[in-house]
Image 1 (cartoon, one colour):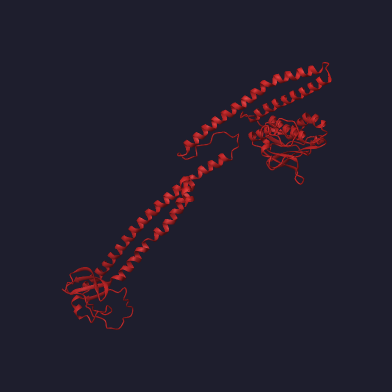
Image 2: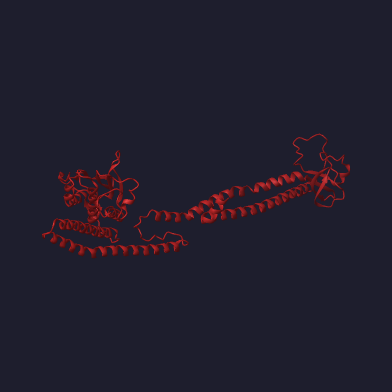
Length: 461
């Protein structure tokens, strides 16, 4: 009962369904009672009219009465028969048995209808004076009349008994359909990406909930403006820091050319590495701000293998320093629909991340596959991989896997996720070796473009 009350107070849809059902029930009960009483009265009126018609027919045909003998007449039904006798013959009644005619009706009855108890049975009696001056009695058992009238009245309730459950089903289905736009709107908003802050289409929504949607759209606009302001602040701050860090890097290079003691040179080397990490962080912040920007970028058909080649040229020195075998396993070129710079930044961050977390002498493979209208880009490494518990958190800015000693900004996968969200791509993380639960495999689903002839095989590692 508590659950019903809670649901009734929390759910407008359930409250509306219950209210309409109760209203239908009350109306159906009142209408049923009225129909039953009306049908019962009409049945009695029809039965009285039948007695009048029998009396009129008897008078019109100037019939005479001959009372039957004591034996049963074939086809005679004592429960539904109509009794006709002369009122003056009531004195000739043989006893108080209603099975024999004449019956002992009072001779003082006036013309018209009345209900009498004769021989222990209730009768509906019509007394009529014929044109010949004879007074006749037309009678029928009242219990039989009442039984037939009640049956007729109950039959009049049959449409209500059928219509009531049908109306309940129709009302329930109608209420669900009326609230379906709200459920659809809820699913649409729930399935949105965190970066999708465009307004909700309010044209197809009911008037009652349109003001609520308008308020949500205004809130989304304010949130989008706030996020855009934060991105601009990060980009501006990173841009302003780039020049001082570049100047510090140049001064450190000039200082390293001068003669100094070994301890001073070691300290300068540490300073130079710190400056380089800071420059890397600033570049990553700028890249993240650009990836999260809502500005439209032109899209075109881009060669995946051409992007792979440019990325390999950039990261090859870092891979050689760790003796990592890196290359492209795929031979056939595939075209994807995306902004070329977005794809270049996405692949570069994935490959850079793979090289940094792959141990000395490891392997990094780049592949591309075609699946119907989509293209699957994969970057596999032989590093430690990422556990299932951490696979969701690694896309957060500045998050780094636990137990990792590799220096980094923690923004690489965040940039990849931001580009994927903005371009409609899908990312999935898994293990390169599912049996040993080692190595990281990053798969990216992109929209397929027009195909081109295969590139030379020297791209393979």
